[in-house]
Structures are given as structure tokens and as C-alpha cells.
Image (cartoon, rainbow, N blue to C red; front, top):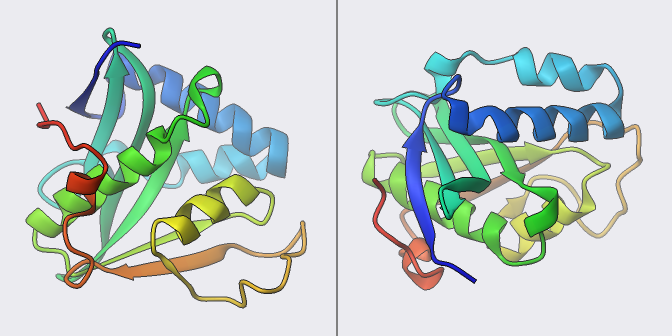
Length: 173
């Protein structure tokens, strides 16, 4: 298997097309028409520096995973959005790698805390965030109702060390 590279991107770049297409399909499949609304909720500027960032993991120049963060509140909290792993590349730790890269970049940008939400019909995302040390802001011992609301998580970036280093961080280009 070839090496991964980490690249910064901007929504609308051709390399982000698989992320947007597959993530929209995933949301619509799991949640119905509300998936389109979620994908349209934030414009490209939300995920652009200096307050945001969109990263892609590339294998042989092709995007295989990605994610972004945006400013949630000034100046301390970032919010992870648009986490994605291509269907043919799942169960390889790529989502965890993207998350670690985003945490590291947010910490370097001065954020002290990071938030994210996932939906009740995304048990694999819930598992990823719990395994990555996120604190659930709901009772994680109770199985969420399929039609329930979002499942929020948080993480203190100042006490978690350099998670990206543990995930085999490569330089961001």
C-alpha cells in the first residue's frame, strides 16, 4: 500500500469532489432530504484559514479521507465537520488519522477545545470519537434513538498531547 500525504484544500477544489459527493450520499441515505440541508449549512469560507481548515488524505494523488474544522466560538473552540472516508478505504484507521491531523492543526491555530457532533445513525462515527478520547455530552451507555438528535462530543486540546504524532503524522502541504 502506498504512502499517504496530507494536503490542505478548499471546498470547491476538484480534489474535494469525492468528499462532498460521497458524504452527501451518506447523509441522504441515512437521514433523508435533511442530508442535503446539512451539507449546504456552511459555505467554503467557514473551513478556510485563519479560522478553519479542510484537510484531505491522498493516496497516489487521490483523496481517500478528509475532514474540516471551523471556528465554533471566539477564540477558544473549533468544531469538526465533514469527516469522510471513501467507502473503499474504510477500516484502515484513516478517519482517526484525519481527526488527529485536525486536532493538531486546531491546537497550532490556538484553539483550546474542539467540538463535534454525529448522528444517531452513524455508530461507526460514534465509536471513532469515543476511541479517540472525545467526551460524549450525552449518556453513551444508552443506545441513541434512530430518529433522535445529534450526539455531541468535546475534547480539551490542551491536555491531550499530540495525538497526530501518535497517528503517524506526515507534514501538511
